[in-house]
Image (cartoon, rainbow, N blue to C red; front, side):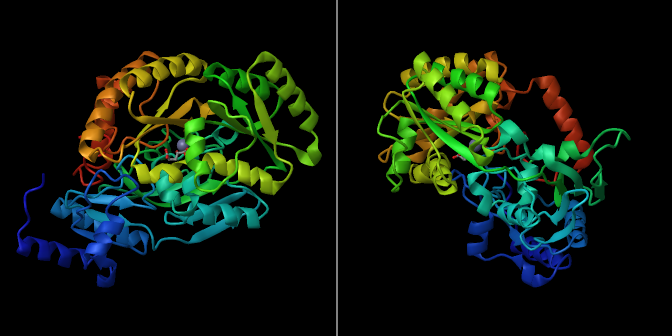
Amino acid sequence: MTMPMSPETRAALLDGLRTCLEAVHVRTDPDSAQHYGRDWTRLYTPNPLAVVLPGSIEQVQNLVRYACEQRLALVPSGGRTGLSGAAVACQGEVVVSMERMNRILDFDPTDRSVTCQAGVITESLQNFAREQGLYYPVDFAARGSSHIGGNIATNAGGIKVVRYGLTRDWVTGLKVVTGSGELLDLNRGLIKNASGYDLRHLFIGSEGTLGIIVEATLKLTRPLCEPAVMVLGVPDLDGIMALYGAFRSALELSAFEFFSERALRHVLRKGLQRPFDTETPYYVLLEFENPEGRHTDQALELFEHAAEQGWLADGVISQSETQARELWRLREDISESIAEHQPYKNDISVRISRVPALLTEIDALLGREYPDFEVLWYGHIGDGNLHINILKPADLDTATFAHTCGAVSEQLFAALQRHGGSISAEHGVGLTKKPYLHYTRDTTEIAYLRAIKQVFDPHGILNPGKIFD
Ligand code: S2G
Ligand code: ZN
């Protein structure tokens, strides 16, 4: 816990912050503390010293230099849609919101690249790309709230990774203010640049602990042409990866997701329709380009073969863009439909080849350890990424529930370690997964992470306590 600050010290620090940017953008009201002091986790009480909203790179540099002088912790803040507490300010830190730095600065049709400030909303960038006849293919349910800067700081993945990869694969340039207040202008949009270490990749996924991302250059691609969506009813876990092998060998998949019947029931309660009459324990949602219905026959042949093999029991293929969107909602609306149950979330990954063995092992573990809890499975199974959500019983207090789930997480992560997996596939480490980092990174590697932190944030002011202490 931080030492209580004297009123005089607090007043002096706030005055100091007001020398870095306009006083109106230094907020200390309780509503701002609540709104900017936390992400989508609900395990921590926001308690920032202040929230500042810089409007320029120079102001961000002034803030960092002042924070260095005063040894003042800064929490960089985007859309705060994170699920690991990485954007939480509960120790008297200063939240540095990039909300005001939200402009698209440049677009080049030849380079097919766009340069934007960190505070651009993901969906705004996606819409801008569409207006240019192009596509920014990193996509997920939080697109309407998340910021590009936060997507880069967490190397956001989402629902199209099987074909388009992660945020990391689309960043061709990055401007970052380091923990010393220096501005780095990295790679500048180049496709090829063999001039030494590629520092941009250190900042991508660094969760605000190495620098404050202020601008990014991102490449764009051609749009998906008439994507078709199939939802398949799957009788058992083995069928899921068998379907993946069959469909990916014949079609260019842009998504391969799965979810359980339990997850589907929560989404249906919000008014959506079942994809078909048959109820099965699991469902696969896959998407592929289908210009003029060119691949429909092939998809239906694959469907028939899979049915003969017993990999699926029923299914539907979208007949229109509207139906494709409705089918996607069955998967994308899961997270929001269960939020009221304050779920304990695990977001794990293994190599695709290890998914069947891991699924079987974890299914047995969770059945044994969580007999009374409702456990939901869903995720980007095509990337080897599973989201396991345990819903908090209404009559169980949050602390007891979190402690119980945390104990099972130790067993879950030990199993994951045996399969060479990661305790965090896409949501990051932040605060919630920090105690388990050693299951994925060994002591040698963690020592190097700390050494890198020391280089870029020598005074330890950037998001201290996130990822590791
Ligand atoms: C998903 C969204 C956050 C969650 O739905 O793919 O990444 O609820 C998740 O786990
Ligand atoms: Zn996800």
